Length: 396
Image 1 (cartoon, rainbow, N blue to C red):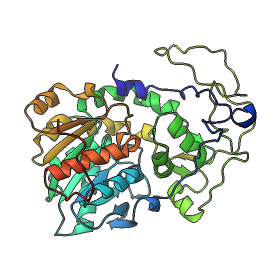
Image 2: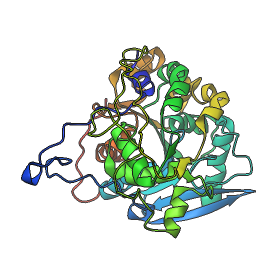
Image 3: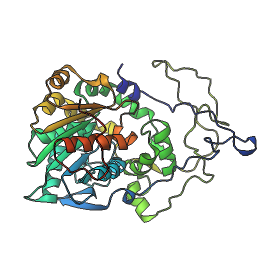
Image 4: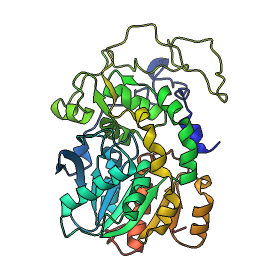
């Protein structure tokens, strides 16, 4: 079983670390006895501006950072949003002279389309080309297309269809055809076992970090907003936070919606290990009353299964056939299939491995990913380094 499959089959939160002793011998959270801050953070702490781009009957949300240099055009993974690139754009903008553009894809984030259900590779690729045309008309700047997971597969589709005539580089983050197709069998199980609703944005962010969905708290505090919508008004959490900068948390400030077996006063279960590869059974439901659940996922990924194989099938050959400079950034060395292994040995693309991070590589270690991207652009003379930038990662 691959590392990605194991992560997709995860059905509970990891055990909570033993609480430390705070002042007076009282239990606390962390070495200083304080709870972690899961307060959501707005997009404008990272991006400089935002624009809603009209394409026919559809409106696409796009975020911007930087004013000079080539355009790094970011495509997020399935279920994520453009805000998953927030921390990375800040680090990248400090390293090289470039413009960062992050798009909410159809059915995701604050993009609103007449047909939200069709997220086929062909439709999404057409959307990317149409948004770029709307932004830059007949004089597009040099573009480096960067995609994570589904977005990485989509970037290869865009490159193959030659939808961006000014494409200089193609960067695919933590997706390989064989591994992705194998993992699809476990995707519905993963989706069923994650929480379907959250009491507050704070709870959602806490789940995000403690479950390992995103391991970087700073990134989770901004990126989770683009993945959720309110149950009452169906608005995205981003829109709600713009209107109400201080969203309500649970009444006592604790994480009522997240119960862990090691947490004090948590209900206990006698279920024992579940018969699913040694994983523990989900913790029992709390016996105390909870605040009304307010948020759910922006997109129901379980209903998009018909498109999953179309995203990834043919990815390796599509990636290798792209004439632009190519970079494959992975979280583990076990991801390469035979076609990519041969291509890498022939020097057809640059490969970089960043171990000890999760599938959301660009969110878990945005500073390291920024170093990799900056080095890639400087090496190919696509962008000028800023004062003090030093190449950290050699090409593989």
